[in-house]
Image (cartoon, rainbow, N blue to C red):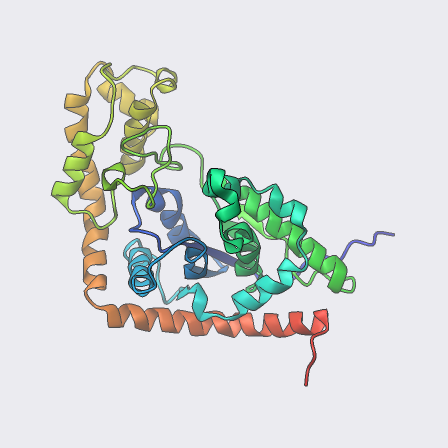
Length: 347
Protein backbone atom coordinates (compact mmCIF):
# COMPACT_ATOMS: atom_id res chain seq x y z
CA UNK A 1 0.00 0.00 0.00
CA UNK A 2 1.45 3.40 -1.00
CA UNK A 3 2.24 6.07 1.60
CA UNK A 4 2.00 8.82 -1.01
CA UNK A 5 -0.52 11.58 -0.23
CA UNK A 6 -3.80 11.53 -2.11
CA UNK A 7 -3.74 13.66 -5.28
CA UNK A 8 -4.56 17.35 -4.89
CA UNK A 9 -8.22 17.93 -5.70
CA UNK A 10 -8.60 21.73 -5.50
CA UNK A 11 -9.60 24.17 -8.25
CA UNK A 12 -7.30 25.06 -11.13
CA UNK A 13 -5.47 28.35 -10.66
CA UNK A 14 -2.76 30.13 -12.65
CA UNK A 15 -0.13 32.42 -11.10
CA UNK A 16 2.57 34.46 -12.78
CA UNK A 17 4.32 37.80 -12.33
CA UNK A 18 7.16 40.06 -13.41
CA UNK A 19 9.51 42.35 -11.55
CA UNK A 20 8.98 46.11 -11.89
CA UNK A 21 12.58 46.68 -12.92
CA UNK A 22 12.47 48.91 -15.98
CA UNK A 23 9.79 49.11 -18.65
CA UNK A 24 8.37 45.91 -20.11
CA UNK A 25 9.46 45.17 -23.65
CA UNK A 26 8.58 43.22 -26.76
CA UNK A 27 10.31 40.10 -25.43
CA UNK A 28 8.12 40.22 -22.31
CA UNK A 29 5.03 40.48 -24.49
CA UNK A 30 5.90 37.70 -26.94
CA UNK A 31 7.41 35.41 -24.31
CA UNK A 32 4.85 35.87 -21.53
CA UNK A 33 2.15 38.54 -21.66
CA UNK A 34 0.38 37.31 -24.79
CA UNK A 35 0.18 33.85 -23.19
CA UNK A 36 -1.24 35.34 -19.97
CA UNK A 37 -3.96 36.93 -22.09
CA UNK A 38 -4.70 33.61 -23.75
CA UNK A 39 -4.81 31.74 -20.43
CA UNK A 40 -7.39 34.05 -18.91
CA UNK A 41 -9.82 32.82 -21.58
CA UNK A 42 -9.85 29.38 -19.91
CA UNK A 43 -11.60 27.99 -16.84
CA UNK A 44 -8.77 28.53 -14.34
CA UNK A 45 -8.64 31.57 -12.05
CA UNK A 46 -5.69 33.79 -13.04
CA UNK A 47 -3.52 35.80 -10.64
CA UNK A 48 -0.96 38.13 -12.23
CA UNK A 49 1.15 40.05 -9.73
CA UNK A 50 3.83 42.70 -9.96
CA UNK A 51 6.55 41.14 -7.82
CA UNK A 52 7.85 44.19 -5.97
CA UNK A 53 9.06 42.08 -3.03
CA UNK A 54 11.45 40.33 -5.40
CA UNK A 55 12.53 43.73 -6.74
CA UNK A 56 14.12 44.73 -3.43
CA UNK A 57 16.51 41.75 -3.37
CA UNK A 58 18.94 44.08 -5.18
CA UNK A 59 19.72 47.77 -4.70
CA UNK A 60 16.74 49.98 -5.57
CA UNK A 61 15.41 53.48 -5.04
CA UNK A 62 12.40 53.31 -2.66
CA UNK A 63 11.00 56.55 -4.09
CA UNK A 64 10.82 55.02 -7.58
CA UNK A 65 9.31 51.66 -6.69
CA UNK A 66 5.60 52.64 -6.51
CA UNK A 67 5.81 54.27 -9.93
CA UNK A 68 7.52 51.21 -11.37
CA UNK A 69 4.76 49.00 -9.96
CA UNK A 70 2.15 51.18 -11.69
CA UNK A 71 4.16 51.08 -14.92
CA UNK A 72 4.35 47.28 -14.91
CA UNK A 73 0.63 47.00 -14.12
CA UNK A 74 -0.17 49.42 -16.95
CA UNK A 75 1.86 47.25 -19.33
CA UNK A 76 -0.03 44.12 -18.23
CA UNK A 77 -3.33 45.87 -18.90
CA UNK A 78 -2.22 47.44 -22.19
CA UNK A 79 -1.15 43.99 -23.40
CA UNK A 80 -4.68 42.68 -22.86
CA UNK A 81 -4.81 41.33 -19.30
CA UNK A 82 -8.39 41.97 -18.22
CA UNK A 83 -8.75 42.97 -14.54
CA UNK A 84 -12.35 41.72 -14.58
CA UNK A 85 -11.16 38.20 -15.38
CA UNK A 86 -7.71 38.19 -13.76
CA UNK A 87 -6.52 39.56 -10.42
CA UNK A 88 -3.81 42.17 -11.11
CA UNK A 89 -2.03 43.28 -7.93
CA UNK A 90 1.22 44.13 -6.21
CA UNK A 91 2.84 41.19 -4.45
CA UNK A 92 3.58 43.26 -1.33
CA UNK A 93 -0.15 44.07 -0.93
CA UNK A 94 -0.75 40.46 0.15
CA UNK A 95 1.24 39.91 3.39
CA UNK A 96 0.61 36.17 3.28
CA UNK A 97 3.33 35.89 0.57
CA UNK A 98 5.97 36.84 3.13
CA UNK A 99 4.55 34.69 5.93
CA UNK A 100 4.39 31.57 3.77
CA UNK A 101 7.89 32.28 2.46
CA UNK A 102 9.28 32.05 6.03
CA UNK A 103 7.51 28.74 6.62
CA UNK A 104 8.83 27.44 3.32
CA UNK A 105 12.36 28.54 4.25
CA UNK A 106 12.00 26.13 7.16
CA UNK A 107 10.85 23.39 4.78
CA UNK A 108 13.37 23.91 1.96
CA UNK A 109 16.92 22.59 2.29
CA UNK A 110 20.13 24.56 1.83
CA UNK A 111 21.39 22.11 -0.79
CA UNK A 112 18.30 22.70 -2.90
CA UNK A 113 19.01 26.44 -3.05
CA UNK A 114 22.71 25.98 -3.67
CA UNK A 115 21.84 24.21 -6.91
CA UNK A 116 19.87 27.18 -8.25
CA UNK A 117 21.80 28.47 -11.26
CA UNK A 118 20.02 31.84 -11.46
CA UNK A 119 21.53 32.99 -8.15
CA UNK A 120 25.00 32.23 -9.50
CA UNK A 121 24.20 34.13 -12.69
CA UNK A 122 22.80 37.20 -10.91
CA UNK A 123 25.32 37.34 -8.07
CA UNK A 124 28.29 36.68 -10.33
CA UNK A 125 31.74 36.72 -8.76
CA UNK A 126 30.56 38.80 -5.81
CA UNK A 127 28.16 36.23 -4.34
CA UNK A 128 29.25 36.84 -0.75
CA UNK A 129 28.08 40.45 -1.03
CA UNK A 130 24.68 39.51 -2.47
CA UNK A 131 21.64 39.85 -0.24
CA UNK A 132 20.23 36.81 1.53
CA UNK A 133 16.96 37.71 -0.18
CA UNK A 134 18.54 37.14 -3.59
CA UNK A 135 19.70 33.71 -2.43
CA UNK A 136 16.28 32.73 -1.05
CA UNK A 137 14.41 34.36 -3.96
CA UNK A 138 13.19 30.95 -5.25
CA UNK A 139 11.59 30.17 -1.87
CA UNK A 140 9.58 33.39 -2.01
CA UNK A 141 8.69 32.43 -5.57
CA UNK A 142 7.34 29.11 -4.28
CA UNK A 143 5.28 31.03 -1.73
CA UNK A 144 3.97 33.33 -4.47
CA UNK A 145 2.64 30.27 -6.27
CA UNK A 146 1.40 28.17 -3.37
CA UNK A 147 -0.25 30.90 -1.30
CA UNK A 148 -2.97 30.63 -3.98
CA UNK A 149 -2.54 26.87 -4.35
CA UNK A 150 -1.83 27.59 -8.01
CA UNK A 151 -1.88 24.46 -10.11
CA UNK A 152 -0.28 25.92 -13.24
CA UNK A 153 2.50 28.46 -13.77
CA UNK A 154 3.45 30.00 -17.13
CA UNK A 155 7.25 29.85 -17.22
CA UNK A 156 10.09 30.28 -19.66
CA UNK A 157 13.03 27.92 -19.91
CA UNK A 158 15.03 30.03 -17.43
CA UNK A 159 12.39 29.58 -14.70
CA UNK A 160 11.81 25.82 -14.96
CA UNK A 161 14.39 25.09 -12.25
CA UNK A 162 12.61 27.41 -9.83
CA UNK A 163 9.29 25.72 -10.52
CA UNK A 164 10.88 22.36 -9.81
CA UNK A 165 11.98 23.77 -6.45
CA UNK A 166 8.38 24.88 -5.80
CA UNK A 167 7.23 21.32 -6.47
CA UNK A 168 9.89 19.95 -4.13
CA UNK A 169 8.84 22.35 -1.37
CA UNK A 170 5.15 21.52 -1.87
CA UNK A 171 5.87 17.77 -1.75
CA UNK A 172 8.00 18.14 1.39
CA UNK A 173 5.33 20.27 3.08
CA UNK A 174 2.66 17.69 2.24
CA UNK A 175 4.82 14.89 3.59
CA UNK A 176 5.75 16.71 6.81
CA UNK A 177 2.46 18.42 7.62
CA UNK A 178 -0.26 17.07 5.32
CA UNK A 179 -1.22 14.02 7.40
CA UNK A 180 -1.62 11.92 4.28
CA UNK A 181 -3.29 14.62 2.19
CA UNK A 182 -1.93 16.77 -0.63
CA UNK A 183 -2.53 20.12 1.06
CA UNK A 184 -0.41 21.85 -1.58
CA UNK A 185 -0.63 21.08 -5.30
CA UNK A 186 2.52 20.26 -7.24
CA UNK A 187 2.30 23.12 -9.77
CA UNK A 188 2.67 22.22 -13.42
CA UNK A 189 4.58 24.40 -15.90
CA UNK A 190 2.76 26.03 -18.78
CA UNK A 191 5.52 26.42 -21.38
CA UNK A 192 4.84 28.91 -24.20
CA UNK A 193 4.75 27.20 -27.60
CA UNK A 194 8.14 26.66 -29.19
CA UNK A 195 9.03 28.67 -32.24
CA UNK A 196 9.27 32.27 -33.27
CA UNK A 197 8.79 34.78 -30.50
CA UNK A 198 9.24 32.45 -27.55
CA UNK A 199 12.70 33.90 -26.86
CA UNK A 200 13.52 37.36 -28.17
CA UNK A 201 17.15 38.42 -27.95
CA UNK A 202 18.89 41.77 -27.46
CA UNK A 203 19.08 44.09 -30.46
CA UNK A 204 22.73 44.71 -29.56
CA UNK A 205 23.77 41.10 -28.87
CA UNK A 206 21.96 38.19 -30.45
CA UNK A 207 23.38 35.78 -27.86
CA UNK A 208 21.81 37.62 -24.88
CA UNK A 209 18.12 37.65 -23.99
CA UNK A 210 16.27 40.95 -24.43
CA UNK A 211 16.19 42.34 -20.90
CA UNK A 212 14.56 45.27 -19.13
CA UNK A 213 17.60 45.48 -16.86
CA UNK A 214 20.08 45.95 -19.73
CA UNK A 215 21.68 49.38 -19.25
CA UNK A 216 21.28 50.15 -22.96
CA UNK A 217 17.75 51.13 -23.95
CA UNK A 218 18.73 50.44 -27.57
CA UNK A 219 18.92 46.73 -26.73
CA UNK A 220 15.13 46.38 -26.56
CA UNK A 221 11.84 47.58 -27.99
CA UNK A 222 9.80 48.84 -25.06
CA UNK A 223 6.04 48.44 -25.12
CA UNK A 224 5.73 52.21 -24.65
CA UNK A 225 8.17 53.22 -27.44
CA UNK A 226 6.84 55.55 -30.14
CA UNK A 227 7.17 54.92 -33.88
CA UNK A 228 10.34 56.97 -34.38
CA UNK A 229 12.08 55.27 -31.45
CA UNK A 230 11.20 51.78 -32.69
CA UNK A 231 12.38 52.57 -36.22
CA UNK A 232 15.65 54.01 -34.90
CA UNK A 233 16.34 51.00 -32.67
CA UNK A 234 15.76 48.54 -35.48
CA UNK A 235 17.86 50.60 -37.87
CA UNK A 236 20.74 50.49 -35.34
CA UNK A 237 20.23 46.82 -34.40
CA UNK A 238 23.37 44.74 -34.72
CA UNK A 239 23.58 42.57 -37.85
CA UNK A 240 26.23 41.06 -40.05
CA UNK A 241 27.30 41.83 -43.62
CA UNK A 242 25.83 38.73 -45.28
CA UNK A 243 22.47 38.66 -47.11
CA UNK A 244 19.64 36.65 -45.62
CA UNK A 245 19.91 32.94 -46.44
CA UNK A 246 17.29 30.68 -47.96
CA UNK A 247 17.00 28.23 -45.05
CA UNK A 248 16.49 28.50 -41.29
CA UNK A 249 19.42 26.17 -40.66
CA UNK A 250 21.77 28.71 -42.22
CA UNK A 251 20.86 31.22 -39.47
CA UNK A 252 22.22 29.05 -36.66
CA UNK A 253 25.69 30.62 -36.76
CA UNK A 254 24.28 34.14 -37.21
CA UNK A 255 22.60 35.08 -33.91
CA UNK A 256 21.73 38.70 -34.76
CA UNK A 257 20.25 37.74 -38.13
CA UNK A 258 18.34 34.88 -36.51
CA UNK A 259 16.94 37.24 -33.89
CA UNK A 260 15.65 39.85 -36.36
CA UNK A 261 14.10 37.21 -38.58
CA UNK A 262 12.54 35.60 -35.50
CA UNK A 263 11.04 38.93 -34.43
CA UNK A 264 9.61 39.47 -37.91
CA UNK A 265 8.13 35.95 -37.86
CA UNK A 266 6.62 36.41 -34.40
CA UNK A 267 5.03 39.75 -35.24
CA UNK A 268 3.50 38.49 -38.49
CA UNK A 269 2.52 35.00 -37.33
CA UNK A 270 4.72 33.38 -39.97
CA UNK A 271 7.34 30.69 -39.70
CA UNK A 272 11.00 31.66 -39.91
CA UNK A 273 11.24 29.71 -43.15
CA UNK A 274 8.34 31.67 -44.65
CA UNK A 275 10.13 34.94 -43.87
CA UNK A 276 13.31 33.65 -45.48
CA UNK A 277 11.38 32.51 -48.54
CA UNK A 278 10.34 36.15 -49.00
CA UNK A 279 13.67 37.84 -48.22
CA UNK A 280 16.36 35.30 -49.18
CA UNK A 281 19.29 36.98 -50.88
CA UNK A 282 18.36 40.46 -49.67
CA UNK A 283 20.49 42.49 -47.29
CA UNK A 284 19.47 44.14 -44.05
CA UNK A 285 19.21 47.49 -45.81
CA UNK A 286 16.03 46.14 -47.40
CA UNK A 287 14.89 43.95 -44.51
CA UNK A 288 15.18 46.36 -41.58
CA UNK A 289 12.77 49.03 -42.90
CA UNK A 290 10.10 46.34 -43.45
CA UNK A 291 10.68 44.97 -39.95
CA UNK A 292 10.47 48.49 -38.50
CA UNK A 293 7.11 49.10 -40.20
CA UNK A 294 5.74 45.83 -38.86
CA UNK A 295 7.04 46.47 -35.33
CA UNK A 296 5.63 50.00 -35.27
CA UNK A 297 2.20 48.76 -36.38
CA UNK A 298 2.28 45.93 -33.81
CA UNK A 299 3.38 47.98 -30.81
CA UNK A 300 1.30 51.10 -31.54
CA UNK A 301 -2.00 49.95 -29.96
CA UNK A 302 -0.21 48.62 -26.87
CA UNK A 303 1.81 51.83 -26.51
CA UNK A 304 -1.31 53.94 -26.98
CA UNK A 305 -3.23 52.08 -24.28
CA UNK A 306 -0.20 52.18 -21.99
CA UNK A 307 0.03 55.98 -22.43
CA UNK A 308 -3.67 56.33 -21.60
CA UNK A 309 -3.35 54.23 -18.47
CA UNK A 310 -0.12 55.74 -17.15
CA UNK A 311 -1.69 59.20 -17.43
CA UNK A 312 -4.34 58.08 -14.94
CA UNK A 313 -2.47 56.66 -11.91
CA UNK A 314 -5.65 56.70 -9.82
CA UNK A 315 -7.23 54.22 -12.23
CA UNK A 316 -4.20 51.93 -12.03
CA UNK A 317 -4.24 52.15 -8.23
CA UNK A 318 -7.95 51.26 -8.19
CA UNK A 319 -7.28 48.17 -10.32
CA UNK A 320 -4.33 47.15 -8.13
CA UNK A 321 -6.40 47.62 -4.97
CA UNK A 322 -9.28 45.54 -6.31
CA UNK A 323 -6.86 42.85 -7.48
CA UNK A 324 -5.17 42.74 -4.07
CA UNK A 325 -8.54 42.32 -2.35
CA UNK A 326 -9.35 39.38 -4.61
CA UNK A 327 -5.90 37.89 -4.02
CA UNK A 328 -6.13 38.27 -0.23
CA UNK A 329 -9.54 36.58 -0.22
CA UNK A 330 -7.86 33.46 -1.65
CA UNK A 331 -4.55 33.72 0.23
CA UNK A 332 -5.84 34.30 3.76
CA UNK A 333 -7.65 30.94 4.15
CA UNK A 334 -4.52 29.20 2.82
CA UNK A 335 -2.20 30.87 5.33
CA UNK A 336 -4.69 30.14 8.13
CA UNK A 337 -4.66 26.47 7.14
CA UNK A 338 -0.86 26.43 6.98
CA UNK A 339 -0.53 28.10 10.39
CA UNK A 340 -2.71 25.38 11.91
CA UNK A 341 -0.78 22.60 10.17
CA UNK A 342 2.63 23.79 11.39
CA UNK A 343 1.35 24.21 14.94
CA UNK A 344 1.43 27.97 15.48
CA UNK A 345 -0.10 29.25 18.70
CA UNK A 346 -3.76 30.20 18.27
CA UNK A 347 -4.18 32.50 21.27
